[in-house]
Length: 173
Image (cartoon, rainbow, N blue to C red; front, side):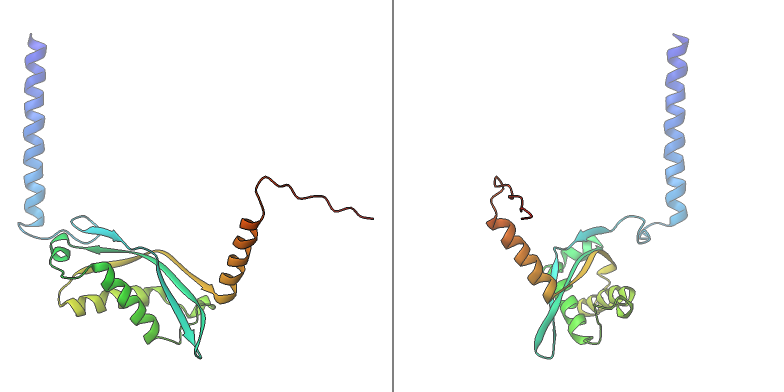
């Protein structure tokens, strides 16, 4: 019986200590203060793959493919009258067409930090509030027109060859 009472007192003391500590920690941060980005309070939203054709000299050189993740405050994103993904896609297109000097075939000329900051800043300026806190890159790729054609031909050949048919050995006569 004494053990049960001791355990009950211990549980009450631990609970009171945890509550007291949580109020102390909340007081240090300040009442009503927003949590710091990357530490909680933000939603992480993934985009679908954004495909932008890159045109030089009136012909398509290839496609810029990106899958982005952006952090937003849930209250701010609910206020938007258009989908946030449409804003992100529009800004990616605008950025790439406004900077035609970027050569994706040479990795040295691609500045991903400038790309992320520009997307974030232009969206926030366009909305008139701090909507996007951070733009993260989930996937980025560039496919030249030749790579796309080669992949298409390879898929077409694979589709025309039945899976049950085994290749016949070539004799060396």
